[in-house]
Image (tube, rainbow over all chains, first blue to last red; front, top):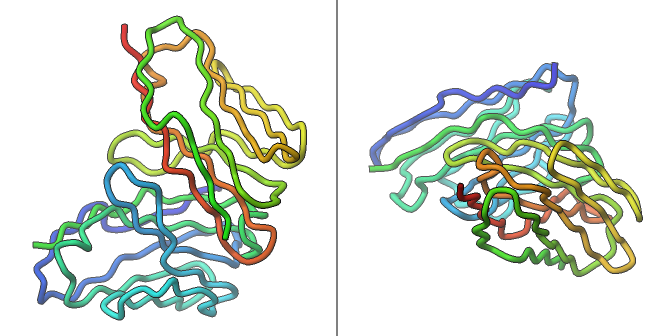
Length: 115
Length: 111
């Protein structure tokens, strides 16, 4: 099973809402990633978790709060977002977090619209 | 800081023609990935290139890696409409935990 799943597929939220994105993998991978992708641009790394610990935060605003409850699950909690945060949010996982040396497997993404 | 440049950024080609997309990167790396992305969809892994001289082929696509020149190519042979998509190369840093993506090549294959 080389699948990374993400829910929901689509999310529309107001600027005062709190919502969460969920990502799950059952490949035994110990690294998980959140990326943000704007239209017609490459994915931008947001966070990296390695062995359930946050190892990289790419200076992401605090309105985005990641959480890794266990090795299979990654959440992204959203609060007080801005319209410019509207994007495709991609989750990925890899065997370890040794950069790109282990292939990253991407989930289908969550299309987020902030109104 | 690792920089990755793809060209062209936009490519419109006719069915049946051949073309090459180039991916240059700025620092040493021995691992490079090619992805395909359809509009509104996630990234689909096409090729993983692990060492200098690596060449991989799948259908009408062939990718190669020259680590000395810091260059990878994605060659399209006899293009068909179904290949229309955006293609990204991504390079692994030799240290750290990052993939650095190129800007992407938006490919349109016209009948």
